[in-house]
Length: 192
Image 1 (cartoon, helix red, strand yellow):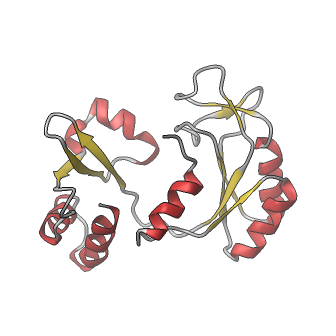
Image 2: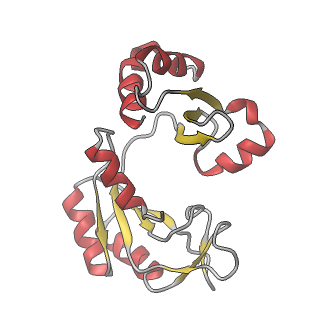
Image 3: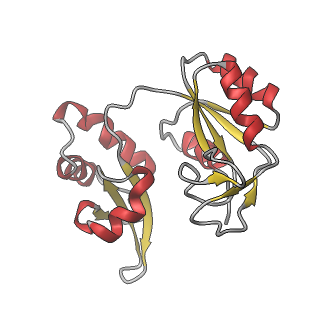
């Protein structure tokens, strides 16, 4: 199944996972309006294609990235103009790239620490696994190859979900401050 980031975030929101606010737009003017309506000093303007690596990808024939930060409505409009109806080439699209038909303008936030979290299916065990890393983000594929020990995993029963003790263990292994464990547990459990 292929879904866009904004669609995935809506599914996560419905499941109780906290996600930033954002708006899908199809024109530069809509991007400017979205920036204004979100009301944050910075927004991310993100190309929506069915491939990862957008932040490191580039628009064919230019150096514009598939994810850029806007500090004003004019920035958001300019970035969207550079993405919409253009071909975005990423490590996952191959050299042919994919045409950007819409962008996601998302509220910015202060990032104190970036974590990578995902749920994968362990085919050998036949169960889902929560994986997380403090070294991930845009470079998770590289981390998996060069320093796989930095990617932590916690299998869980799909019928029961992730237990609170498992979520606390993951927070501990990640080295998160104990004051943030409560939020980490809520996040991990909602995700699973």
